[in-house]
Image 1 (cartoon, rainbow, N blue to C red):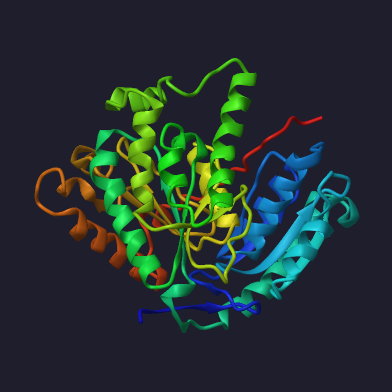
Image 2: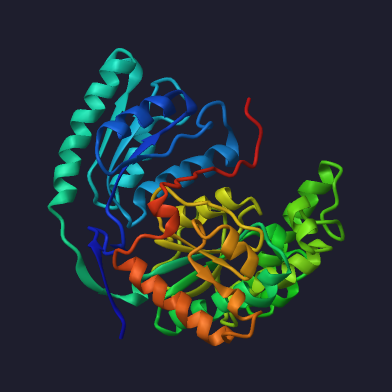
Length: 388
């Protein structure tokens, strides 16, 4: 048994951070939410440009994402800030978050009487929350309660050769210890979806995964773009990748070799009763993808990058791994682990996988990642519809 130290939540989940989260329900409340957060040490806001004039599944997905962030175990208390007339009402978000048992309050700018009065009222509420959180202490819990988000971005050939296989071994170790991992990025399964589907524990899950890949392909075709057989991003091409299928074959190494026990929509919560490897339908855009996994319950993220990226997350630590030794030297301020030692024949995949796993344990127990220490808190909600 591997024991970690974290914060026990009322719903039985465990957080490895203890954030005070301020959620704006729309773009109209985002600036006010950020200003409230700036007044309270340790408070984090998640400004975004959505929340109004959304309909159908797009509306539901944004609500699910905001609620998922509020319910994430790394969050100890929540203030939901609304304008008052937006499509996503603060009470809708707050009521769902409150089911987790954590402290939640709402305020609206129109009801408070403007920006300054709302900032004052919000700061007063959050100061009380901050005192509650400061009194909480870490307790021991088993590593089986940990949910890991798997991400890659700015990929090059070293991602598929060194960093992704190393992360796959770390993911295997977590699952062997009873924990959970989430593989993401539907567009980066294109051309390799049959390999992941073959690992699904039921045919129903396999069919659902393949359908998700087909769904995103059909959506791109409706825009006049066929993703399959085309080139990846300009940075991927410059790095040496030639097709999206080639990129996908390297991407799926992050998932190790464990069976797939669940297939999730974007920001859909992981079933805490079913441990193991999940797939979540997220875009290839890194920030939106990480947001979806964290909204689904991931308390920690491992992010591989060949070209280099500084991306972090507002409420979950992001461990950055590169398989490119040159990128590690060039972006040492941002990259936590140099998996390029595999390419230089200084270490094996197993050794680097253990190094990643060991860092996951240290970070879960309170060590800061480089993204955290630099204050990177990128947040983006994946949209699937138009704004009306």
